[in-house]
Amino acid sequence: MDYVQQMNTSMGMNGIINIFITLICIACSWWALQELNLDKMMKRPKSMQGKMLQIFLSVGLGYQLARFFIDYFNWSTWLSGMF
Image (tube, rainbow, N blue to C red; front, top):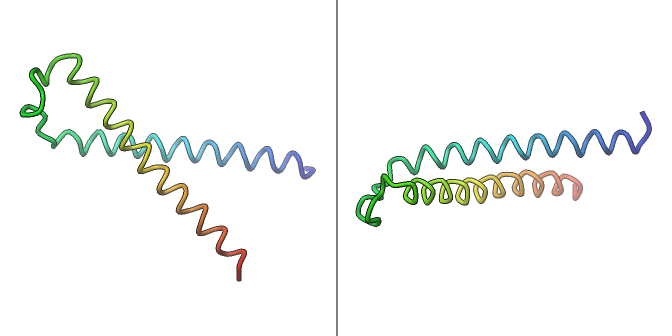
């Protein structure tokens, strides 16, 4: 394999890993938000709008959590270049 093919393969694997980490974090945030009592904050928590709000919250929270883990991993690999 030449250098360009190795870079493309590496970038592809990195993308797959990032997608996988993001989906796991979204699922974990959905699971954690199930314990949140939204009845007191919404008029109709079982309605379609209430469920959509819960989905949006879990996607937003899960994405931020995944970005933290991905960035932390990238930063730690960059630090190895210093030593």
